[in-house]
Length: 155
Image (cartoon, rainbow, N blue to C red; front, side, top):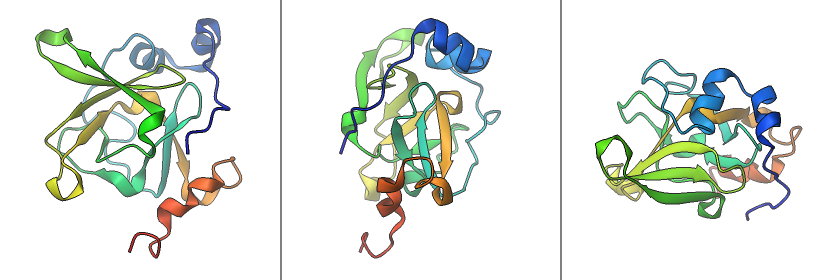
């Protein structure tokens, strides 16, 4: 399902497009503060896309309140759209999550998520994401992701 029409912007384009915080997080691999970010408590239906490329990454149908203060998801929309790599920064071993095409730092994945949903917690920085509401998916070119909200398809 991975779409290949997404392109990574140049660094100059990213500096123009992104806010200072978005650039710091997505490009410089920093972390935004917990509970003081745009999507940690966001409950609207839709999808979350890479702030740099617009590539679809996560769905609100897989979002849950982990208590961490960051948006948390049980899985990505498509595992082929993300890259996971070992991260030894901050004095600990973690698994960093990056967008495949944009190479944006998204956050980290942990194995302490809801067991009934696979046990994973994708702890993601809001600054690396943009949100496309369900009712705007088709108009903004993401219509093929409407199936994520079809309750009949999930049964």
